[in-house]
Length: 128
Image 1 (cartoon, helix red, strand yellow):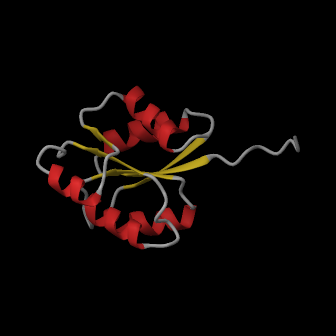
Image 2 (tube, helix red, strand yellow):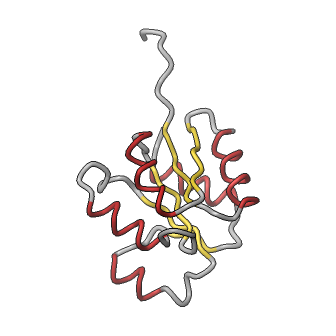
């Protein structure tokens, strides 16, 4: 071992609901191998993902700027980040089921969510 600390996995959280954003940020940052970056505007998510070299994107569907599905489409169209896993967190899973299926999205957690389940999905999609 060279003694250098391993790079933390960077998780960008696209969430405009302040209490949920804070909860996710704090819970992710409590995991020693992860670092959360919260973005509250959909239009800024893609730029942030590129800048911080994100390892995982946790994304709400209903956001100002661009909605989560628009952000997802842009992420998948960008060669520099297209392979990054995306975990959706949404209260709108029911009426957006067809939109998710059409895009092949299977990684989603429905609000209200169990924080431990969400963190387990994060570790599964983005192992430390």
